[in-house]
Length: 119
Image (cartoon, rainbow, N blue to C red; front, side, top):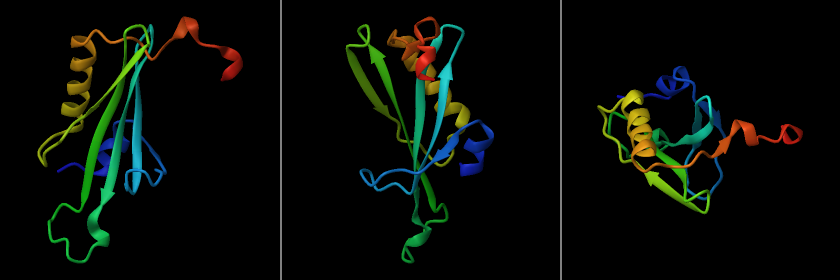
């Protein structure tokens, strides 16, 4: 069963989420290589322990998504993944990396195009 600590140990950073998807908070990690930023995996975290009638043992649920850049940055595609209790951080990361490669996605931003003045 996945926990928030599993993702923190894997390098995800916690952030406060907005109200638009009713998540309690988010976790996010950048995926990059020597050429540039490829994509971010964002996990929306839902804490059902606040509902007294929720009886499932696993009170924390995760909803991962990634937005890929395609067609020279002209198009974006968001992929949500429905995960099971026995999935792992490694499975989620490999799933998205395989998609990025299979779809021949563009880099979110290449390092040689990075504007130092905006950092």
